[in-house]
Image 1 (cartoon, protein in one colour):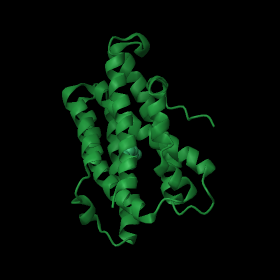
Image 2 (cartoon, helix red, strand yellow; image 1 turned 90 degrees about the vertical axis):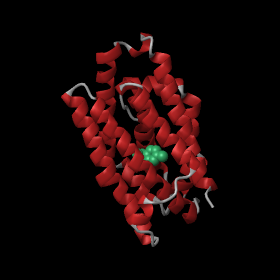
Image 3 (cartoon, helix red, strand yellow; image 1 turned 45 degrees about the vertical axis):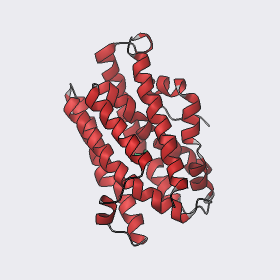
Image 4 (cartoon, helix red, strand yellow; image 1 turned 120 degrees about the vertical axis):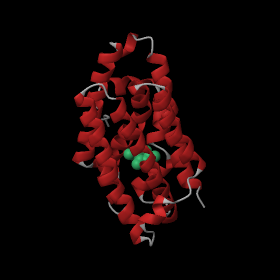
Length: 227
Ligand SMILES: Cc1ncc(CN)c(N)n1
């Protein structure tokens, strides 16, 4: 199955992190969503953590608005904040409400260490670095779920109870967001450092992307390990 095309910078970073990327996008948690074998308790606990994760990721994308250098960048980053806060998180609120957990409880949930490590790593990349540091740390999140959603939509068990989760990320609106962000990052790279393949900052940016990818693996693992 061919992976969707989310731009050249992402493709280069993904290829150089191939092993970690495979561990992330084919984690046992993901396979449990696909075939329906994931225990419901793990899914709900994961969603609670993921709600908190998305709060901090929205802060990181808001920082990207602040660090934008063009109106196009600003519009794309602001649209991503909107997609996270007003669309993606609606799935979490709906599913957790059905499990008897209201939004106030989600907002004040205690963060698991793997969640804290990931979100604060990304926020620190933005505080310490520039727009590209922040994008390299943010892309595994956006594009990874886009890729997972598209693959699972094509291969999932007909009776998996996680079809709504899968459809959220396979949805044309989410896929369009991945493509828009990918194109914006390609333009941002060209504007700031020219050709990514030969740029002196290539290794440092790759490290940001690869670290965030490993933190995604840790996030899935946390979802399986939560009591
Ligand atoms: C941990 C994590 N990574 C990515 C996504 C997709 N926005 C998410 N909801 N949660």
